[in-house]
Image (cartoon, rainbow, N blue to C red; front, side):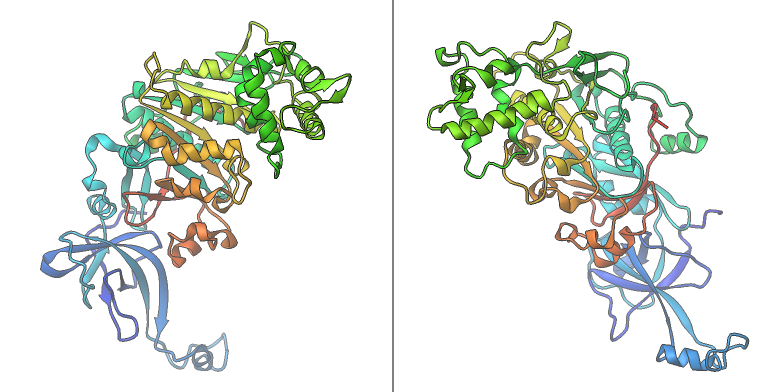
Length: 539
């Protein structure tokens, strides 16, 4: 399709007695030879030679027929073989949400004002991108409108990485790996746009081996995809300086779908886990808080004379002070029956149902993950594989990472140079911070990052199928929200109240690879496309 002249008039504004234009919305009829779609950005002439920009939200076709029955009758009572007796006059009407005016004039658009498609400069003005400093602009996708006009969409670094605001969340059922692909694209965009030594990235691999080859070039990348990278001002290349951490299996080998280059195996002995023991029980109901109390007793007592015979998981479970002669013992104010319940849960987690990550003694080749992450460097990417772990182990590892990074940045006596920012990316966030879930050590840790992380430099990138399934305080603190195709029941949940009803309907029919981008700087959400990742992916 040939690109149309952007400045060519495609219709004129229309205001009626029953459907007036307002300071927030206006209507325009579309000339019969033009195609307009929801999410197109248009400009209308306004007072004092100013321009008002707006986002098309929906379209209607109206005729002079009083009713559908009148149309039926005019076709000889439903005959399909004859021309209608009464040809109808009709027009297609576009509904538009006002985004901005070039002279800050927000009087309603008057009737019969020319309307045309916005060009890239106009789109940037409409979104507020023109007010961003050049060095703060991060390419985040490409707008492609009905007239083939294209515009690069930039997000503001200060609202992605702080200090103004931070955090990003992606939701939708758009298709295989769309959410992950967009997150990886944006991470690559950040690393190529800002000083890479200022940022370290930690990525959780939660599905198969999807993110275990991100430092290897793809088998094939089409010219169209390469061109999309170029249009965004970016280089299509894999990630550099990547380190992989794989969990230990029961046989002492890596418990992973793929063995990437430059990988280490991590495991958890008791001494590695004692100060994060509360994270092990994040998924276990504890209404009376007896488990929490017992964890506190163990953490306070470990290393003292009371626990002198305890050096590994087996000792903790089967010897004093928790057990004697096979029977559970009272500890502090915690009754013996509650200690027995604790032992049963702990034995299930670290012995009977473990995938091998928990061990009584780490070998010299097996790493302490939190110690390694405390050596984090700017310009490096760290991938932690948890795909083969069970849910409890996944929650524990993620909680360990979040706590380690948060505490590093919160400490005032850190003796080595930390990167300016650390981005943690995790998919399936609803597993770790569910909506309506009970308070737990893990949820508290995630809330700490979402509410206070930006001031420290700890940034959360997250994804899940349904935003409504995630704790509202986590998504509510995300300055950037990315929405893929979703269901009609989902988009009508309170979490989507920031969207107009017409945009919610459009969200249910987004194609794979199309996403709706809502950013703190933008005046309206916009539909974008983005290039496929330029690293090796599983078929």
